[in-house]
Image (cartoon, rainbow, N blue to C red; front, side):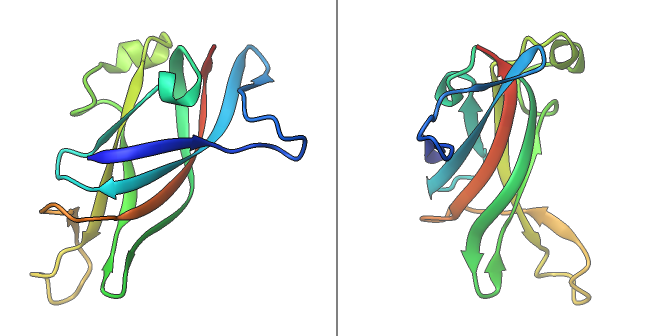
Length: 132
């Protein structure tokens, strides 16, 4: 997946990580310019951090019409690191994937990963916690 990460500035124009207790947080927008099934690996470095301890999706604008995509974070499976590394704060990336309603299910109550490549799939806003 081709993507760009933009750091969001606060009301003072600061776009660097901010202290929060013993760690730092930063708000970013991931612009998914070319979605592929494997997902996007968003690195700590792209977020101006050295490690990632937690990530929360705070908003998204993915897909249009009947092709609305829901962002999902993979923290363990397929992300390339274990739950122990997450607890110890040794993660250097997260995998961002998109899910959508399963069109083969007539009740539209099942989700599935977006099964194929797409062009521009939209933007995902995230708050990322970690160490600098």
